[in-house]
Length: 397
Image (tube, rainbow, N blue to C red; front, side, top):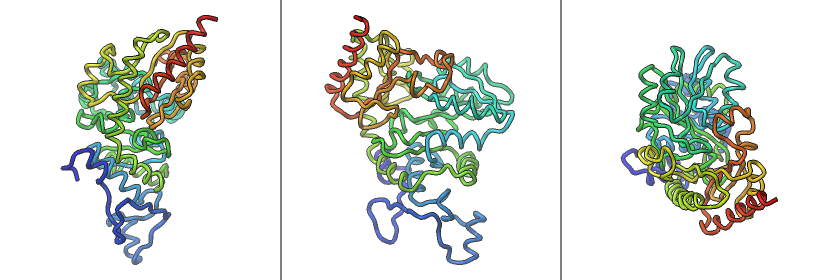
């Protein structure tokens, strides 16, 4: 269905109806599959004949989700995983070996840094961290043994924007693969493959679901890197997506474009308003003209997304007072939900990295992150005003 537009692909791509003629996609809750003969079983396991073998790596519901997401991203192949972090792990395990070097943005999800620093390095993988917006730093960090570039754009939580096209060119000059985490934008707002990325990672848990119901991830790319290499790791190690979760994600994809548009519009409205509020030191949102990479974001994205971060006065004390004073937003570290969420990154999403790593990434004690949901913006403003009043009260003590 590649000739169709994104909204149509999000509803229709990947579905193969069974003999029952169902309109909605079915959930195939089976661990294994029956073969017509011993010869057919042997052919399936030999991979000379395509078909289902075992739901650790072949399931019709999961395959429907994979094909639909691949159509949205413009990828030849997609492998679904049990979580976003499982997608990153599967990519690294499939494509890296002892002695390889990766260059990683220093503005990525805290668990990504923890995975690299605590586990990959134990097996002989080396890493250099660079600023996502410093193209020269990416170029200077390349070594003869560099295998991967890894970046998020926009980054979590400061909305740092990396120039995907420029960094892809730098990578490809040296035979390096570019991996882009597209979690914050999704294919509704950004198409990394069109800008030169080799692989795209998703935490489907976030916007691809959109209602905070289930956990999952995905890796997308060409048939060799994903269809063979990453799939081979999934088949052997098993960090797979469940059929039920895949079905939930399919339902989420149907409204993805509509939701991302609404999230983006509300977040931009709130970000502009926050810039005028007392007690707010700085607002981090690429949709603002004050953002240093606003022009770049406008060029490579069709919208700015639903995540905004801002620094409040009085450090952690002010940030915690703000959170505790809110009544509408949910205090949770998840994002991409229809319900707005708020968290303090320094003590939640980025608490597992060292203070020096947080400082390098710009994660201050006064930083708050809001995932703007689908509530009325006026109600969200009222809730934020409660938080800002609490920040002012801290200063008056």
